[in-house]
Length: 61
Image (cartoon, rainbow, N blue to C red):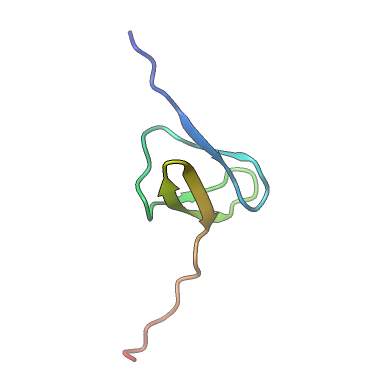
């Protein structure tokens, strides 16, 4: 039986490893299990994570 490769990148907030069970997509949101920060995948090669932008209300502007 073949094992599944885990893809990891460092959390930009606390430097803890953030793991993905499959190849992540650009724009995907993940959560750091150590500091609970919401992270966005900004690049897939090399895998790069940044703090996810805050969701703002759109009041029809």
